Length: 160
Ligand SMILES: [Fe+2]
Ligand SMILES: [Fe+2]
Image (tube, rainbow, N blue to C red; front, top):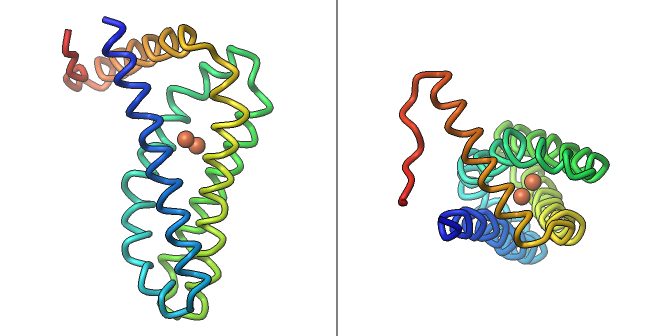
């Protein structure tokens, strides 16, 4: 059984790594040239609308409320601010196709994604022990099941 929670935890951290490596690539592109940065617009928008949005919603719906129970209200508030700004940047990016406007948005997005994942990695994740994280993943799974049954969806699959 703990294997399932370890896997959930690993998936969450893997998403962080994905955002971090995307951010590093984008910052390099943005430094290279305006045209290089602009060429990343579609890929970045797809990432922000898909995997990044899903990750943020998952954190906001399940992880953050539980972290608050562990006394991390201030840290969660900072993360909420970062998430809001990332969504504003996504809108701004979606609203322009002018390379000279795209480049600075991409640079700020990349810098914030990097800062945000580092913030979570430095100030939130280490605050909980491995066992506390497992317990939190267990609670998350319970909340997911509850929510799924409320809206009449099938329960998320378990592999026990
Ligand atoms: Fe995160
Ligand atoms: Fe986050």
